[in-house]
Length: 144
Image (cartoon, rainbow, N blue to C red; front, side, top):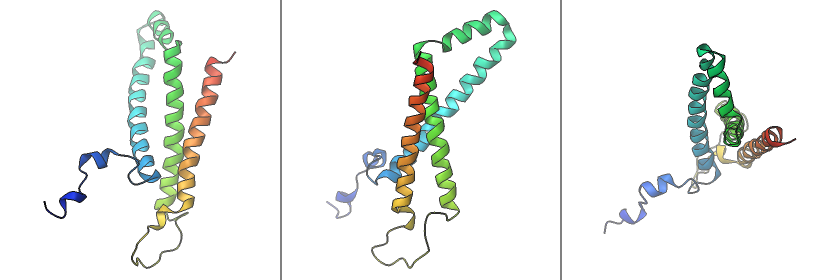
């Protein structure tokens, strides 16, 4: 066996969001929430355009959203939108150099400045705020 082959985990490692820590988890969650929001956006456009077919069709479409399943989907959309927004702001600030720190010489072992504790705390905060937004959305939709 080649000495390099035992260090190759293949596609399993690429699909493992925890292999590289919280940054990889945020990377995966950002992509998943982006796809989820795109799907919701397309469905929402279709649902909203049903008003052009008359009041009866519009009311039938609204009845679909006023179910328990519809509320759960909206709670997930709230969480996806909140996380995607906050994490996107974190990424934009990081690309602008805010929160990364001063540049330094890349001596061995090189630890990227972007993987500092401030950056990781922002990821945890974005997940936490998304969870709080989902709880609030659940309270509004299911609370009495």
